[in-house]
Image 1 (cartoon, rainbow, N blue to C red):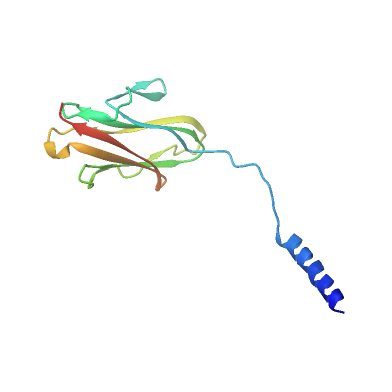
Image 2 (image 1 turned 30 degrees about the horizontal axis):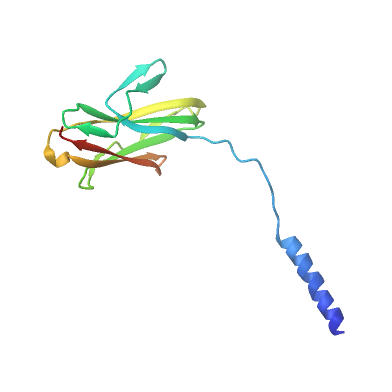
Length: 151
């Protein structure tokens, strides 16, 4: 009787183990709103249907006119809300763009380029390490730093 009971427990364990595990393999969803580039430069120009940024830089001087935070996003298949937050060297919020909406028609866009621009102040208190944070649809997408100093 004891051997029969052990075999029954073993059989039930195998049945429950098999029935408790269920796997379903699907292909992963297509990527969308992929941040391909995020960097700083001194200016941005319009080239055809997209924006083209100047050379990437992470160090700027107080005699620089502007600092641009440039992004290139690919495979946009729906409306996207972008937001830039600039933090000064003292870690305080210096500039907030609020949300800027792109692709309001919800059409597929292969490449979207955008930027925000900071006018540089010659005030020495703004020298140091700056941080820029980018949000997509209210969620953190990336964060990057640059240095502002005198020559």
